[in-house]
Image 1 (cartoon, rainbow, N blue to C red):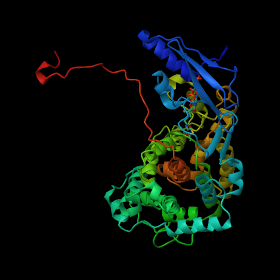
Image 2: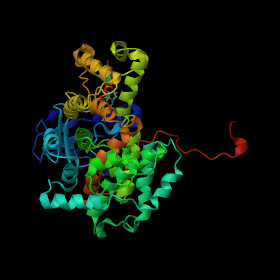
Image 3: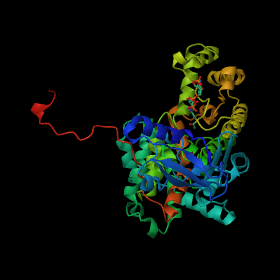
Image 4: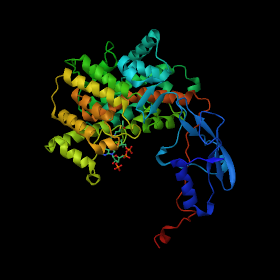
Length: 472
Ligand code: ACO
């Protein structure tokens, strides 16, 4: 038998078991019968615990990703796995999106993001993610017609918008209103997946109405009158119309602006098992309806560690500008660990080569700025920062490349999207990915409610003390 080095997660779990619980010290070795984990489905990992041997089945995904299947671990050994932040935990088997962070690969249903960005559009890509294949002409027309048919909100929902104060964050309004939509739809209130006849209609309602709600959230938070969607406009154009038109004057829709925003939606449409998508799957696993599950995704996305980074890029550029810096001083402080500063929009947890979305969006960014003849001191600072960082050994050695947020923030500013709407744009784009993951959970007959375990480190049995006995 050959010993295989334990991966980080198993090391962590086992070292805790050995160090933290001396009474349960175990002799543990993870052994692979063949010495390597291969595509051979009969490969078993052997685990030696408390003097007994257990077999763990291994799995290999279609792109060669390897996994130990620990689903029977607790039942057979009494142990659970511990993996803070889930860095080593596969929470599901999925067929939607593939990422290889080392090689900078992102594919939706097997199709490279570069091809989709060049040849597809957001709505076609949404169909691909949700239904698994590109639509033929008839399917695409049917999907587009459904989106147009269901873009209007129930008229009474308007009164809910009135309840939010001016200045409310659009992400708070967005998540609340997606959830509130359930109250206006009997199908959502009495949601039973097995008996649901019209999933397609709910997909269309959600994708279409999230855009209407998002635009209304912005209008409300700025005290502007609500603008109804136009039946003749396509998806992204309609969003810009609802966002920027006035009752007395339609917003001028420049094709390059519509195209750039559509591309931003497409590039954000899915990104595997990140924080918000995992949240959607978690809520879906309880059989909650589609809108409730995706509203939870919006809440998860709102956090600055997740969807809020594009906003942080613009805030950083603004701060640099106000301080009269051209970016050179900021680069120095971003390299200094004691400064508490980071070059926002650089680096990525998964992509350690390049973020493929960033390459695509950079080209779009250059083209939009050129076509719109935009001059903006913040954009000049962004370009200087990017040039300097890509030549700087600190960033090069750490494999810190610009991520999608670096350029998407710049494009959104260039096309006039207000900063507080940046994360909302991300949420509109991510909706198809959330729906695809929701559907995957619901379509799986073996799907179970998500219910992780924990290692309890609190007090052992602790008697209740009356108030006069406390603090003694
Ligand atoms: N600026 C300066 N230094 C950085 C940056 C940065 N943006 N990112 C990472 N580093 C440094 C770290 O300090 C660390 O240095 P060290 O090895 O000397 O200690 C090294 O690079 C590795 O960084 P980690 O924190 O280990 O990288 P991790 O993969 O955990 O974090 C993250 C990735 C969170 C994206 C990080 O790069 C970061 O904070 N970037 C800025 C925020 C940002 O742009 N987030 C958007 C991500 S994309 C998205 O969510 C859609």
